Image 1 (tube, rainbow, N blue to C red):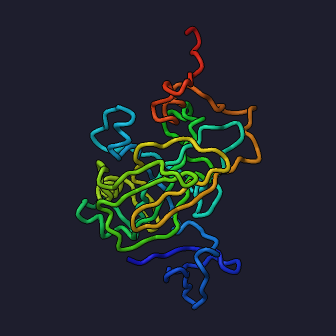
Image 2 (cartoon, rainbow, N blue to C red):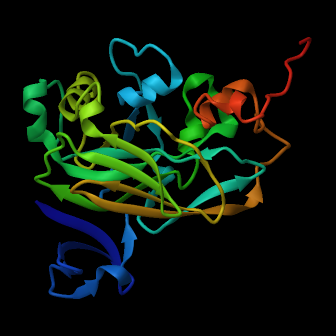
Image 3 (tube, rainbow, N blue to C red):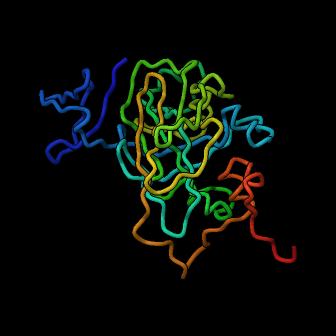
Length: 284
């Protein structure tokens, strides 16, 4: 396996390769990993995410999985990097982590079979598919603002090539405490299936990213929390939660809510056991 990163070095964007605890640029410059300012390891034209894939997540919500995957988009403006701050806007409080494996496309991909899919994958990285569930009741199910708000798609720290995605652990920690403990073996649809499925009618370009789903126990985090996603063989992606300097405007658009849908999703379906009740519906 080889590990490639993108960093800021002397004010320029530089591609580097990991060698031990250092990062080596093509011109011979070296920087310690601990001192590097990371950027997203790839430059996608689109970020496509599967709604549900891990069996533990499906069981957690006690729902029936669809026969085939369904997807949503995260806009490029949501991109973030290893070490970057994740912003929870003021007037919002239901920001959830979702540790995931990200598939990175290596060459233009259209109308391929599952057997061919591996030839079109450049490698893999770690993602944290943060969701701002205060907006769960808006956007007619597209989750544009839930999953697409600025900073809510950290990727990194590296693009790893030659990684075998089978039977690898995926863990999420908050302030050092284990919160998610999953494995790629519990994915209903593997990496090759997801690529082949999307490429049937959407052309995938080099650098494009597919997020492959999260295991159970996605929960809200607070400003000041350190959230880290660790995937066997891919490293550890770390991000700090901060409060945004500006509140969500009240003079336009849908407003943050705390409906039953918001609470049950943010709290994994167990909100009713925490003494939390959603607002009563009109006429209830």
